[in-house]
Image (cartoon, rainbow, N blue to C red):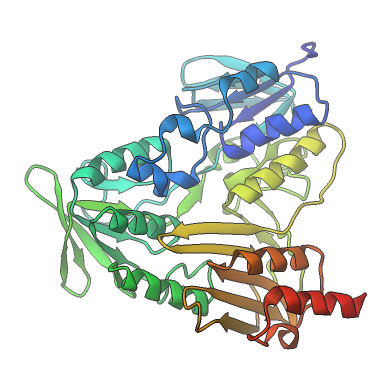
Length: 427
């Protein structure tokens, strides 16, 4: 490897950061690569933290993105347990960083892959001084929750989003009494359409999870020994609790971007090549606010996507940018969530839809496919326990096949057959 100059420094030992390092080497990039992460653990997968990791089926070692040999074999310097506290930039985009332990590292290319942090709930009792109140974003959070969950009986989850519902389903499967408190009118209101949301609501309630919609928590009740004992609601109702998970979203970690003068608005603003406003710094993953990859009419210009898929896609694009082979090509956004017996898979973005088609099968009531259209063209799909539908629709959307509500409305015919029929006609 060429060590004649500082190379690329990646701030954040995240999925996006590790993928970028891997993709750089795959592109033939020879200069040094250094990843600096604040956590002590090797970079790891986050999705299992709200599911199999809580039950103990998955260990910390099982979470690792790569083994140690990968980093040494690819000449990737992994620096852990050091938080970047300052960045000195030169006019050409090079510079150096300083860490919480007093170390300094130089770079030619700077990448911010700093992820996001849990949004804090501003009510009495919702802080770290209350035993039994947990947030769930990193492995230390998950280890703490797993320990608390082992002795808890009454679990209250504040927030009906991805993480909250996954953890709620996991706790219920472990025999806990679980209540989900959501201030909105539906579950996963920012991510899902109403039909899929209602389907999941019914599934969770059928699984004996109490779900309270349009309900505001006003206080987490604490004993004299600083242990959580309940949650007070705006209605005056008191929920018993010996474990409270707060899952009310995340905020992008864009503080370093702001400190060096980058344009930030719900994340670090980047272009289609993952380049920030200074023309040199790269930002990827949950901390980056990017041009909307869905270019259909009616969609917003920008979006910040929180998914493994986006982390990998952005890292791949950024690697090409750094290696001098810029390309903005990327795949269709997709997401997934395992919630008890429901496997939710989403492809595309539902923003801007003006028509829906909902496909159910009385013979298979545990399945659902919701289709979203704008100006009679398919823009997104949500599939619950319907992996074949998901793969077919993801492929169709990726290839920009034009599918109308009429093409997909016959619920007696499988999606795959309907899409194939449109394809053969178009051909």
